[in-house]
Length: 327
Ligand code: PCA
Image (cartoon, rainbow, N blue to C red; front, side, top):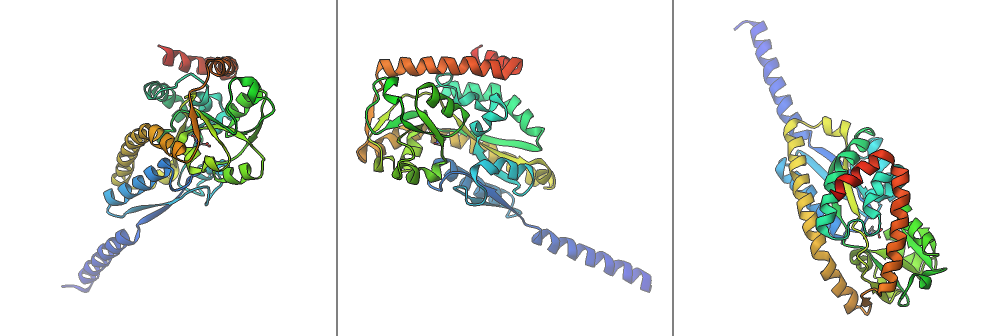
């Protein structure tokens, strides 16, 4: 064998070895910021998603979940993923309602109040939501709903006049608007900060799910849960498109398959949550009440006002989505 041939063969062997070890070393590690505590079913679902991805890719992609706003604060997560500081992340879709009303459609009171309706609403909003986020370099992986939203307070609220002047915890533009229309005084507070906010008297009432009531130990500061089932808002998981594009096709497919599974599993978990978490609220001394017809009709009026304003703000595109939903 000539020396040049030998050199060529050696080069090939070295190249192959580099490729092999490179392949093994190139296990991609992704940090994933999420806003809610580990025990929340959304976070449990995401941990499972990360596990599924790791298994399906034979460890080639490892997603490290940072829950409860520990890596990025909730309000920063979307932009962190957009800017590539985190390749993937979760947030409350309705948090973006200020940016575009379409993101807040699922927190409009009494538009979609059961899971079948929520599913239909997601089906008709998903293309628009995906499109808007795509323009920001984000790809939607999956969305999972919270259980129906109910009203927590220290005393029973029999009509909206009982909400007058209450220091009300809001979580986005819609809940802020609802509080204002009810004559309450809204303050936006993250789930992770709820116990502190209630303990110090910054807030004294809120609308959220049985899940969040349990995760924040609502019984420590509140006594009533009015099961209003007013809307079913969602969390969304997005990936930075550039980061996603750097994965090989097989890994990308594995992520998409795990995401589809997570969406299905998440909806199922959400449906099971309502009864399960209401039972825990009761066990800890919260009075779970069916809202009075006066309260319901007051809330519906507020919902109608909010929908009217939403339609004005959302323009033709929003109206098209609403029309598709109502068809
Ligand atoms: N929990 C979250 C969003 C909706 C819900 O049920 C919160 O209270 O912020």
